[in-house]
Image (cartoon, rainbow, N blue to C red; front, side):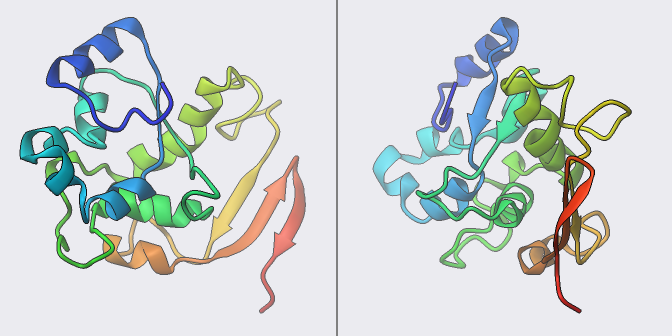
Length: 170
């Protein structure tokens, strides 16, 4: 289900039971979080971009950027999923912070989850013998830096099909 952004409480269990993949764009939460509650009301907004509720219900997540509507950068999406800190600075601890994900859960949604949603989990989505070997190397370890610093991380190398296709100048 593309743009599975605003759901009813009962939808989480239903998605999980039916094995529906929730294809979402985390950046929208930190952008929409500036105004969504005024338009949707508190209760509906509380279930917007409800990644934690989805994972807890067994819903497979597939993350992407929704470019050109939102920035192409997955780094900003990772930052959004982990912090939920809205762009206007009004929710530094996260807009509905109970829906935040860990870095590991977020990376899994961007990699294994996206591959699964495209029926390509045997070819990509993780690093294993026989898979494509697509890898991005970041300037910082996302697992050890403070979540607020994730948005400042840079790509230093990109490997596609086992070949370096981008390398930042030093």
